[in-house]
Image (cartoon, rainbow, N blue to C red):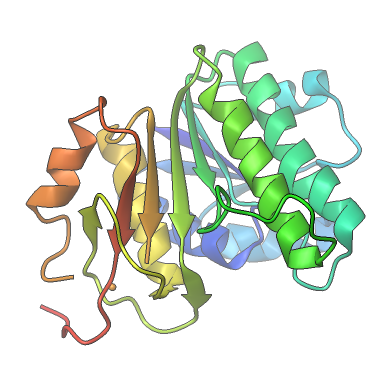
Length: 236
């Protein structure tokens, strides 16, 4: 399987590239900065230099041509202003979906954010602007019949080591999750084709890929599921 990853030099993306390579897949890292090419190559990916804020559907579809799936893991970054939340967190995600359709890439996995469906519509706070942008990108993707999509909405991300324990449930509270566990969830979704047409909130559980996860992936009628990690459990 060939997977093109937007935001290919991001922390989750680098972990995902390593995870996919270890599983025998090929990763294409879409990066804006040519200086990042060496980094993504160290993680096993092939780099394509393209600026998602200043490109076209045609150019992006050419960059992902031949891929079996795309992952949107790009982000404007915490230090950016409201304008870039719109151009990256919403605009680039929508552009990737347009390019995936044009390139006949059927699978799209979105890295979103917990709270993207509950942003304050009137607030000028930059974080609320970010959540609204993520929510708008999610809504655009969910409306597309041409793509087999999955949306993952992690809780607060940490750089802790992977807990290797993920549970999916209809509802979870807010919490933390290591980026390494998010990358593992993404790799599992891509490798198995699970949870198409579903929105999962991830936040480390009693066992990794336990029955609720697999169950949930097979029940497309349910509106939204959440994956939650409980840090108190030890690694198996």
